[in-house]
Length: 411
Ligand SMILES: Cc1cc2nc3c(=O)[nH]c(=O)nc-3n(C[C@H](O)[C@H](O)[C@H](O)COP(=O)(O)OP(=O)(O)OC[C@H]3O[C@@H](n4cnc5c(N)ncnc54)[C@H](O)[C@@H]3O)c2cc1C
Image (cartoon, rainbow, N blue to C red; front, side, top):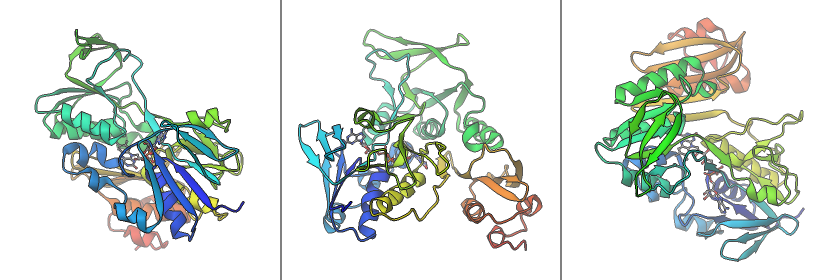
């Protein structure tokens, strides 16, 4: 197909990167990014970190300055959600009634924060955190002494707990799993991370909510746990994951299964429609459906792969399983699948909050998770990608230079 216009639905990391990569690859046709938000495309990770703390602004979050879009000839259509997609004609309909048409439509709509099933009322003091508006509302609701209940101690719940505690809130973090995050970071790292909350004065509780109690205004004043404990609260943040924004794709008849199904070039089941980022799920060459990624680097790489797919080029990177998270002075990085069957190999010092947990299967490094040691995970990513043989003894030995291990040299 000769592509002279591309409409990108969603200006998050994946949509922005698709547009940027199209230009880098020399595509000279029309590009339009459509986003429901009135803010120009912006980055989400700071929303639970610097931005929530008030030490960053929406201008800092923007992927590019306004003049970049002019220079790259990329049109922004902001402030109106897409409500329908007709894949055969490549037409999207906006909430304001406008129709936009292109040769190729890219669905990069991300996900929506899950709501708590118990939350059936009209409370104004229950929050989720996905957008800059969410972060503004949460920041405004937190002051010194605010009793903040966070439901879900995943990456965003834990980061927000740390930021809120820094702002002076009294934070309680409730999660049914003890420790949380085992499938994402492995058991040993999950234990370390969860124990770290106590140092920030954050109370952690293993459990689930059975009831939310509202006052006459409809706002929640207490939560009851399955243990029977009642927690008096001022604000609640629900951090129990996202659901991919697949409604438009479903209505348009695209193949969807916990994400829009795409091939390695990000083509959906309709030749005119691509999908990318958090909402897309890859069917691998052997027909398996891969796990859907919900991380920044994965969204960035999938945007580039989507641009290449639109231009008929094969992806130039394997999909990445790398992410980071920041909380209370510790920087976590993870590469690979920490839940894969493998042996754990430790290097560094938990007392100094600087260490790496490698996961090794025979002579194969399958994953690594580090605290305050980005260099180690950078080396691990190269070793994993190249399939360089390693030994547990070399990985554990702080005298062995990890950079050299990437070249198969132990000392
Ligand atoms: C608070 C927070 C902290 C995070 N921290 C980290 C981190 O530390 N490390 C990490 O690796 N990852 C982190 N992430 C995850 C990372 O930000 C996401 O993986 C990434 O943003 C996904 O990009 P995306 O483009 O697929 O989706 P999104 O960024 O969600 O973008 C989707 C866009 O689509 C728009 N949209 C949705 N529906 C419509 C519609 N109907 N019409 C028009 N526009 C629509 C939305 O407004 C949005 O701009 C964090 C995410 C959040 C929310």
